[in-house]
Image (tube, rainbow, N blue to C red; front, side, top):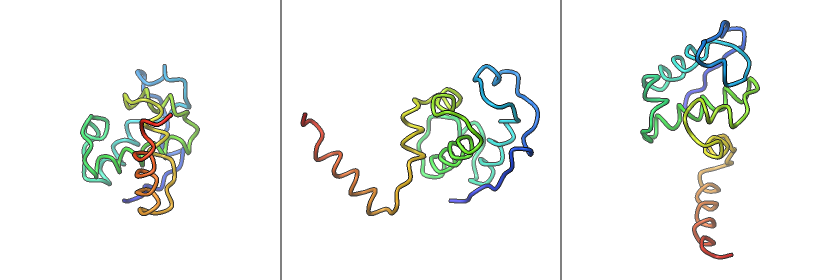
Length: 114
């Protein structure tokens, strides 16, 4: 997964239809375009419903970038048309693939029990 280095000053101006979200104004479309390009996708694909590996990686990078500049989980969720808990789980750090698999197995093993 590639990481986009950015500074908040690179994204100036506002996008009129995004100002209702209640977050710091900057050119959100430019950020989405940069991340999409870095992952070989289009902005529409990044914000769309498909869950292929490269699109999920691009979305995760978008979530992390927006959190870094102060967006709340619910605000990010509203922007990408997903529940805030989806954003929280995507941003949550996982130390290794093995730890992630173990956590998932534990979740499935305890599912259905009170």
